[in-house]
Image 1: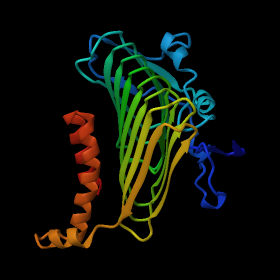
Image 2 (image 1 turned 135 degrees about the vertical axis):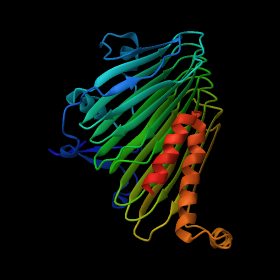
Image 3 (image 1 turned 90 degrees about the horizontal axis):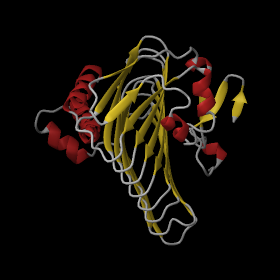
Image 4 (image 1 turned 30 degrees about the vertical axis):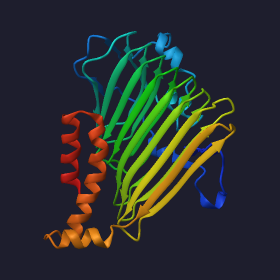
Length: 358
């Protein structure tokens, strides 16, 4: 996977397309992510049924169980985080419990931050986790989610970093029988963003929903890789991405639903909505459905375009300029996803960030 001594390939799609499209993977510069990780993570009040373990030991039950989970960044991710001395943390929801409040984590600081998080929802448990990023340097965060039988996990990330550094939001999930995982992502800051989710729907009626919102502006580079692999019977996944590209920003989206042999009765759907507001902006999208099973249903679609003249005319007739109309639509896409987090404080921070940065 290594291209040379200073770069590696990440966000690799499982089935390559034509090389000239330059979408099969992304290139991550090792120089741009230099610097050892330092712990910059803090937690708010914890629900009684949830444990938060900072700097967890390698023999922790959840850490050991999560070690085999693959993530979106690719096969180089584990060694990359190990080489940068990433701190490993664990959130564990006990069996047959439902957390009344979300677990809130905050990642802040001025120097490189490398963290790994294991979310372990034991059988029939329910837990919600919200992670907020406001880092002024390199930020790399790897999350592995274990959803045991009948559990429910809602994991949300809010990235509002004001920096010219690299932000990595690398996620992997393992969803077991009748378990449900929902992931909500808001990506607004940093100069280069590498994010995605690799999900294993490995048992009967495992379910996944992901919602991602972003604004790519100025000279930002935004690279996404989402992959849902169904091996269990009657699994279901829904992946939604909404965003805006303006100025000279670049965005690449890879979305794969992979129906493996034996996953009969499974369904999958992915949808991307992209608003283009500049002729200099670059958009690349590659939705993929792979199928090795007959009794499945998979759908994908993409809506990519500019603001419609009817919308602009309607807003102009009410005294709203074109630039203000564009800002309204940009914010609306983000806030429609932010509402899924279910936390008013997080939604307010997102709204304030956009007010100040747009």
